[in-house]
Length: 335
Picture 1 (tube, rainbow, N blue to C red):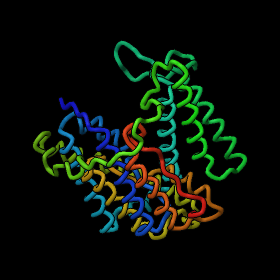
Picture 2 (tube, one colour):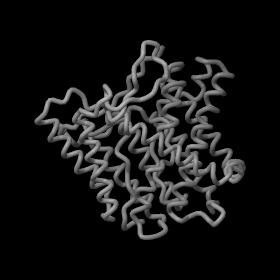
Picture 3 (spheres, rainbow, N blue to C red):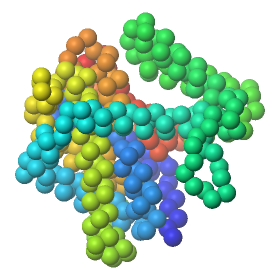
Picture 4 (tube, rainbow, N blue to C red):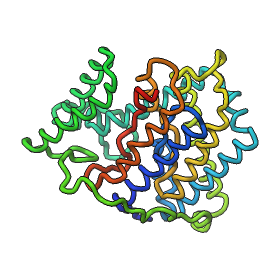
């Protein structure tokens, strides 16, 4: 019903600046090495359930409402009580599930696996490559990138993942220049004509708090807000506890001391994502990559350090951008 076509420049600006702002807050207020960005899980909810039924500002208004509810739950202490009541095994399972979800997205985007099409368009198993075979250039770049990353990690090279990303990006640009590649998927690797441009703030403040209720009704609107809230709630819970465990910030019982501040920033991030029309911003599990670079328990400066690449990338446009920017990493020295 609604054909949403957001301007890519505006979307990149909103996404990276919101991520930079909330990640900085997480370091200053939450005092933990957790980075934040637009969440893949909640974005799926917004794209498949909210966006087809209402305008984009209306959908973002419901995201803002969900963030406000999250902050109220934190203020009353209810969110921390719910998290404490979840068994330790289930907490780890949520974090593992988030990781597997991100893995599947990466495999699909790289062309390593694809959905087997059928006439009824039902949910069916995946297949290797686009036709059952691994034969394309993007798949080769993906495979080489994974092998390079594993080799650097095994050899304990600092910044292994970041080095692999940079190296394989250069390799992909060269391959795209000399070979005939039908499709690279989401982003074509090519040198931009103008790598630096002024950010476009056109999406900031483009939300309607209660406009969605006029489109779908009060009951359905409340259910939509609850769906976004539920996705953000458990997504952040698994990520925060998973990263906290990796950073040695949890106690012997698996509890996270001072978690209320972290949860408050997370709720503020959800509302900020809606207010900037970049969708809900939340803690993301890739933070463990930066935490793993440190020699011991991570320290608070990690999050402010991780926010710097977001701020810098807000000026990299037009061709280096994508709906979700490259994942930031906490520096080894900061950790």
